[in-house]
Image 1 (cartoon, rainbow, N blue to C red):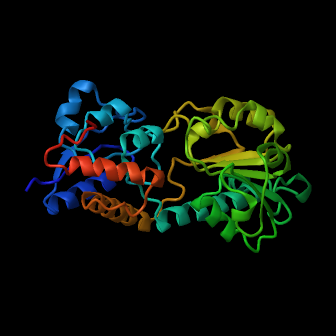
Image 2 (tube, rainbow, N blue to C red; image 1 turned 45 degrees about the vertical axis):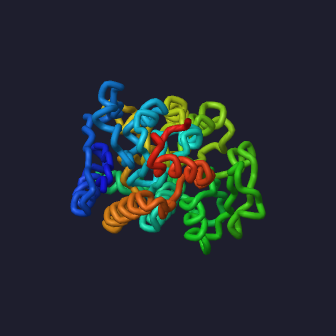
Length: 354
């Protein structure tokens, strides 16, 4: 009987997770083909002449969002049963391509992941309103203690928080804001008011921008969400409002954000993600007093590493058994996926459409 083959990509940001997954796959008598790790911030993109050696026998491709998975690359893997991502993001593969090819995608929105992101988001909200970075800077630099009339700090209580996107993380943020006496509005074109968490008012984007004292972004990166916050949207925000992005750097036009922060239009921002990662050493964001910058690790906790490894292994195991992954990114593909599996398992077939 043929041993299963799993391609495991490389990624400097999650290399330890990928290494652990690869080691456990080998221990389960699964053939592992490893991909290379590019120097940051380069995205890994395999050339067509590499595809036969890397993907021709692959049953599953395990990659991160830093490896580009083009349609042509996926078509070069005729035995492919599905893709698995070790974390929650799946941005490097087009869902439309996966649908057309009948490929299921497993990922890892584990409780440890979205809980860590929700807790850290609420932490950033409180830090911005209370001007934690300003107070810390005052102490570190031995500056005179601020008088109350000069303080930028405000209570969270009584203010309006706007959430863009209403997925797992945003819903966990909502639950953790209960008791803070803040108003919560949200924009998500796929979530009607009837499906919103209690205490959340669903609004359109212009309303969210104009009403919110703080806006937090919780979206995946697609053609629709890329630069969804640009100069026009920043201008519509309330003066001195705050902006948090722990989702995807490409959701914000970074140049427009820097201009808004420099001009004083915004009160401040907290950013865990950037258009280019890692954040360039010469980025103005590194030296601005009204910005908190974290290197895409704000929600990471010790519990998360094991949860990612376990989720990936479970997703891979299930796909190899022709079962849906524990966490499915594209559930609409299930009928097409079953047809693909039937072709792959036909002893007289090639795995491809006739």
